[in-house]
Length: 127
View 1 (cartoon, rainbow, N blue to C red):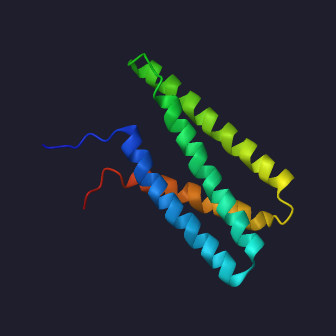
View 2: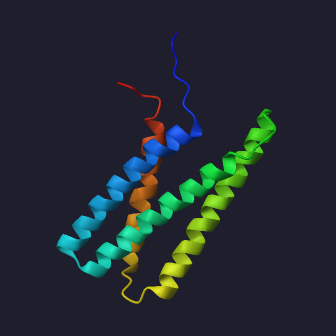
């Protein structure tokens, strides 16, 4: 059985590619059908998920312990860091962007997160 070993970085790159494509698609749709502010809001929501994912990947690089418990702790720390980074970014966007369209921001974030999960699920599928 010939299995390809996928690293966390490769999985993130594949998921991030899908996230960026989905974010741009939602942004363009928002621009065409709603407004410029909705497009910017949805883009900011999607990009915050990409940046949060990147921070999570960076957090996994520093793990030393290769036991199951050590790996689990490293992944939990990475997930906490990811959620915190996304939360801080969203708070900053809500506070600093005057033309914010909240529904578009949440929509961009949701699409980006859902596509990330689908992208990570498809990493091992080469069919």
